[in-house]
Length: 111
Length: 114
Image (cartoon, rainbow over all chains, first blue to last red; front, side, top):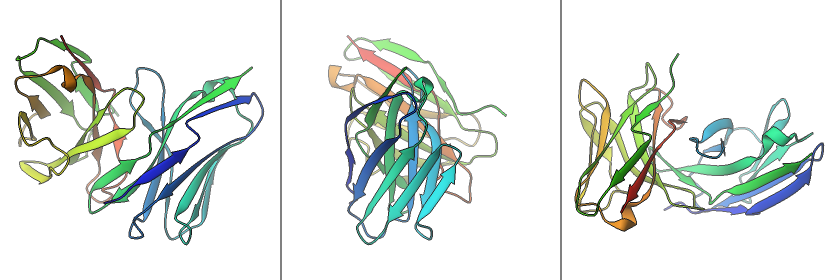
């Protein structure tokens, strides 16, 4: 089955800096890669996703890149703000219906 | 447009009791997924259901766990004879019929087994 590795497990940045979180996956058949943000005590929130027919997607301060050959994808957050502090999860689809998640990155943005 | 709703938000059960977790998908969504999250870990897929059908239960423990999504009413995740190892956050997600992978999560139910 699919295996998703995520790095780093924790990331501390200063407000205004950029943050990059990287994931690798194992199943070459995977074609959908979402990113979720989870705040303490809440459910994961879908913030951006990318499908395998594109290499990059942007939405305001966040962007995701995908390298299918190398089987890795990354989340980029620019001009970070304290409210970006949360746990971020990457995922990849496996099979027909399921998502396999990475173990998460705790992002801390200091004012 | 209400999001995915789960109740209860917190549930405490003694060992050996039954736990019932409920999930109402977003309006217009006909696919429901259940995930379990242990502390400092990612989400682990448990089961995928459509109305009156279990599509994929490959992540469900073989014993004590069951799930249903009846024609009317919420999806139910049922855990019989709970043990301390069942303590976790259980999340439900739903997706529209034509985009199976875009899953939107509810706030979760935090189960504590004492």
